[in-house]
Length: 334
Image (cartoon, rainbow, N blue to C red; front, side, top):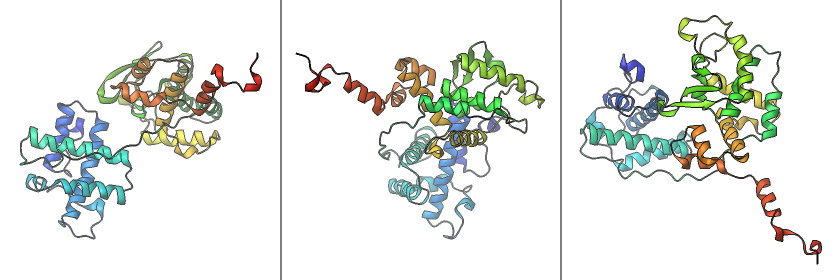
């Protein structure tokens, strides 16, 4: 049963990977989404190794490479240069940017550290000196306040899922929820203006709902509570048209479609996470303290929250103009 919960008992994974993922779920308390990310990274890594070490025919389709028989001896034979070859592979052939490669470095370091220090089945740890690619700091993409209001107003109230989609967008824009947090909201966890969610790392977090959120929820619940669904789904807030819990991909498609229809330039680059950026940026620009913003967003580290404290060019321009010494000489009074 426990293997089903953590999604680690997989016949298509080597034993070492199954043990590692079980450790992440039981001892480290990692969420199912995090474990799935580690699993994906390791699967790609193992398939690459078998190709790179010529253990399978070179014309074998990548997704068809069987990794189940990879044993500890093979894992122990891997050297640091093999890990760098893997990072070059995902960059060149899988179009992985610095962020994606950095996550794979974290996966490999964690996996090899577990085998070397916890299971003690390896003679060395090749990932010990593995360096992560340099990540350039960049300002988060977000909608402006005007664009956000226009997005909400642009929804067609005649559409079947209007109240649901309006409620989803409202919660994203006002609460800065993660996609996984939104999809897992339970009706029983809403009490007055308080919403309790399970955030990153399976940590419970309190979200306070403003008037816009409460109004959107009230309108959607009038529809939602009339939907008959299986008993196991009755407490799930957001349902698909199939009366099952809404999928992450469904929300992603809906968000992008609505943003395109609202007329935002470069709309294709916007995702639910960009709406989280939007909520955080607007709150910060309107006086929310950085420490309070950290709590609202559910960040462990304040450094993560600080990416939202960027100031746009217009704000910088106004700050410079406000300098008392900024007047042209012709405008000085004697």
